[in-house]
Amino acid sequence: MNPKVDKYPENVDRWQTELKKLRTIILDCGLTEEFKWMHPCYTYQKKNIVLIHGFKAYCAVLFHKGALLKDTNHLLVQQTENVQAARQLRFTNAIEIEKLEPTLKRYIFEAIGIEKAGLQVKIKEASDFCIPDELQQKFEKNPDFQDAFEALTPGRQKGYILYFSKPKQSKTRIARIDQYTERVMNGKGLRDCICDHSKRMPNCDGSHRYIGKHHQKENSAYSVKMDLQPTLENERVKIRPLGHQDLEPLYEVAKDPKIWEQHPSKRY
Image (tube, rainbow, N blue to C red; front, side):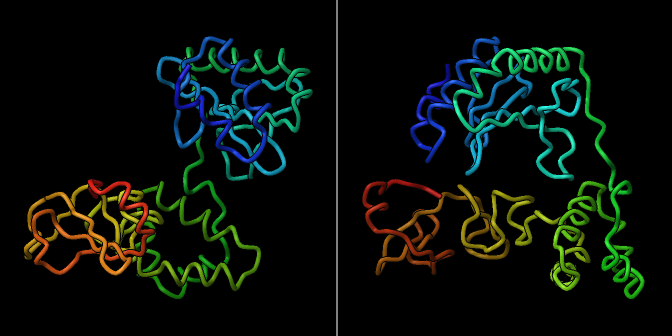
């Protein structure tokens, strides 16, 4: 048992009893318990098999390769049409979990067998997704944009296609395409960092306010990697390179002073 998971049921708003039952059942299947993406995750030889998570209307066991399960009982749920590999087994109370325990275990052992066999879910390529009309119209109006889009990696293209296709209203789809035109022209993906300090999120959120533990900026006093020192000034946290409090702050963010009083040695 992983101690990080011990606290998980107490830190969620609901489903405490149900999550504990699911944990017991899954551990009984011989999987290794880990804590990933802020949720209990269960692995076989370091390969993800299932994950436990809770939502407002239900809690669920997520099978990472659920699309490969036989699911003879037709219980598994595809969260959205764009989810390709994962499938959920949902519960709304502890009685349901007890009733479906044999089925849940059978599905888990089948999932372990799939991992042992090295089976993979066939993931759609970007070309397999339907391009929204608004994006096609953008291509026709701006061939340079189409060239830039097609020069992106398949994964980046797919990310944009899914994001642009999601809104129900055409005007919203158009707005999204226009918003990300410059990013596409610069060869950036939907979630790529745009400040050049980090290659990809979440190390940088694109706002330039928080880069991570180290910061590097060319042609300036910050041209080498160094720890950043946060200081509290007028109830705002001003972050400078450690040992260079004479310089202008790199970042300035509002913070609760009490938090910084409790963690005076925190480094960013």
